[in-house]
Amino acid sequence: MNVVEGLRYGRKVLLEAGVENPLLDAEVILSHVLGARRMDLYLEPQRELKEEEIKTYKALIEKRSSRIPVAYITGKKEFFTLEFFVKEGVLIPRPETEFLVEEVLNRISNIKTPKVAELCCGSGAVAISIAFFKKDAIVYASDISEIAGEVTMLNATKHGVEDRVRFLRGDLWQPFEKEGLKGFDVVVANPPYIPSNELENLPPEVKKEPREALDGGPDGLDFYRRIITRAPKFLKSRGSIVLEIGNDQRERVCSFLKGECFEDIRIIKDYGGFERVIAASLHAGDGKSE
Image (tube, rainbow, N blue to C red; front, side):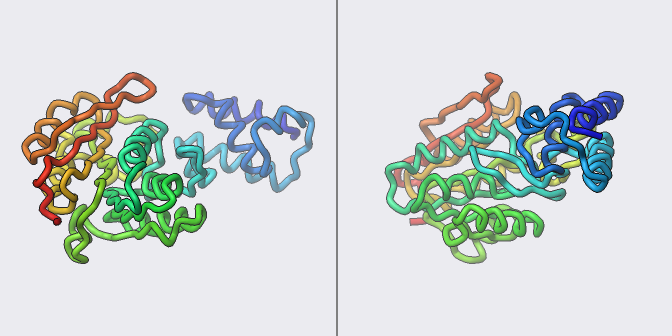
């Protein structure tokens, strides 16, 4: 089997399995097996695959045909121009979440040694991107998952920010409370926000991701309530909160923010034109952490 034949094989198997982008996924998987770039596949189309490469490739194509996400198969995902290690048990970073990072970086750009808290950190992609692109930022990343902690710190080391990213294991604010951590310039989160009764309607690939990273409770808003109502205790006066939101959640989340003395509410749309990020500032004098 050469490269062209391999791609043809992979595309056929994945197409029959109902995978949305069969050729693209075959390219990604084959380039991963060969330790090459996708473009290299077309620069050396007649390259013969070794027996072990064919065996590995076919096994990974089989995994993909069972709708295991490509990122879990290759163990990596690009986010905000950086490559992150991912594995089953953590949410795979999405392109639309890059808007969350952009907004945080804008808000801390003129702050010296800003202190940032990220809740529901998963792979650590948001926390690490913030620390990587704001060289004096100190970021505390929390998650209830032990796997999230392992993956976050692997990624922090990979990108050389392990001295400025600290993982806290616990349920939302609980580890911050326990350690007396407060006085943050920004609180950021991409919490679970899919209503429980909609989880069964998700694509097969998304169902392979951890349910606890997706399930936002009966109305999808449980985590927003819990994050926003306690955020003022951990923020500086005039500190910011930046949250990713799901479809049609803008009005309710705005209502929660206004109820906790947040103002200057800003909505950011993603690449598809959906309202994806909501950001706000705590009213002067309302930060309970100072």
